[in-house]
Each structure stands twice: as structure tokens, then as C-alpha cells.
Image 1 (cartoon, one colour):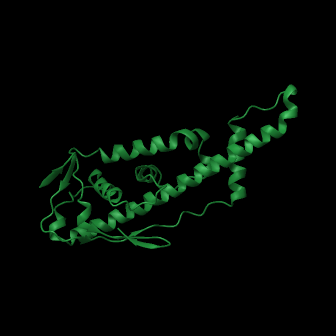
Image 2 (cartoon, one colour):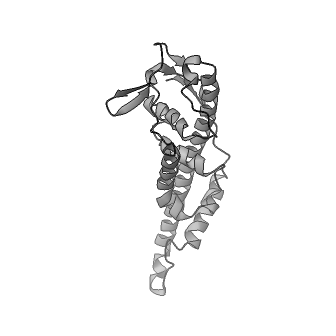
Image 3 (spheres, rainbow, N blue to C red):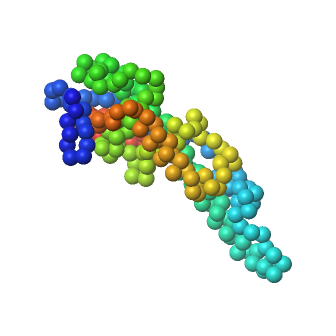
Length: 211
């Protein structure tokens, strides 16, 4: 059964009690290179892709300005890469959490029928991502759809030197969003949301909070 509230569809769960889901365990980000090494790799990207034109004979006196611009671009690339890795780590943690929730649903007669059996990762599992958004379970600087899109695209986050500046500056969020929506929209039917008031769980990282 499905209940429609406003413009949202929610699955109807018998009874009125709240169900305890497994905790969302946030994993540590993969080990990144030392900051100096990241800057070196980012600087190589700036140089190799000619993001800043080299000085002409008439502009040799502007070498310091060019060097500052190169450093600024390298710093921006490093910042974008670290944000990418942090989002990927969230996506990895959420996928593992969804697997644990599947097991939990199988043990609850009122929940077992809500998950259609299929090859992982079935698009219907996007309802768990929506549940996290409804429960405001993520950090304020995390875009959960992007996090999931990164994880669905990359089994492991590639080193910074494997990514072009176009990916880091322009394409990362759009590619991640496209990957997520392709996954979430692969179901033949529109998936109903899980009612957030019927589920409780903990988010566990450096701190523990209940949502």
C-alpha cells in the first residue's frame, strides 16, 4: 500500500511503532598523499594542461604573478579533490549501510515485503538515500546524491593525477548527479519513500548522534 502526502508517495507500514535501523558508520577517508605531494601533482596538472599561458618576452616581469596564479589553481584543485574524496567516502558508507538495512528488513515481517529482490544495487534502494535526506542525517557540506554518484562511478577514488582539471572544476558534480539519477530512475516504477518518522538510527563517526 502507498500513501500520498502532498507530492510525495510513502509506503504504508502496518502499526505505528518506530523501527530501529543499523547505525550508519561513517568510514575514514582513504589515505591521501601528503599535502605537499598533492600540491605537486596539482601543479603538474596546471602545467601539463596549460591552464595558464606561459610568459611572453614582454611579460617576463609578470613571472611572480603567474606563479601566484599557478599556486592558486593548484590549491583549488587540491581542495576540489579532497571534497571529491570526502563525498566518495560518504557514498561508500551509505552503500554499506543500505546492505545492513536489507538484512534488518528481512528480519521484520512488516518490512520484508517492502524490498523487491533483485541484483544489487537495485534502483529501489534509492529510497534509503531519500530517507537519509529526510532525516537530515548527512553533514551540512555533503550533497548526498553526489556522494552516491561518485561511489557508483568509482569503486575506489582515483589518485588526483588521474583526474583532469575539467573533471575537478566543472564535471564532477554533474557527472555524479547524472550517475545517481540514472541509478535511482532505473526502476520501472516510481519508488515510494520510506516514512522518516517510522525509522530511527544512529550516525556514528567521531561523534554519535541519533536521527
